[in-house]
Image (tube, rainbow, N blue to C red; front, side):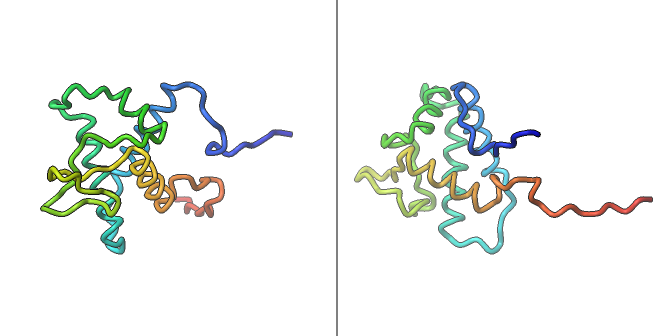
Length: 139
């Protein structure tokens, strides 16, 4: 007899593994094909994640450390992400609040919730063993 434990119920201990997993989630969300049926808020959330990813990897990262950024994201920090989430004079997400200086602010905690919402809606956590098997015709 064997024991099966779903991967999403196992907590990783290795911080590097956790950071790589979080980075994979960000990249996964940003590479999703456009969904013609998604609402405006979901489209805004996806654009906010895309803008955050671009800021993580930009050359002008203003000294941002990828490791520090991912640690803040993993800890659901209430700290504000140092990225302007305005786009075409509109705030990219409902939770982004103008700071009075013309910047829209989002916390790491909110960004985590956005990423997790998008992952769940796009079946990221679905068990592939639960998917119906398609018969492949033999040639």
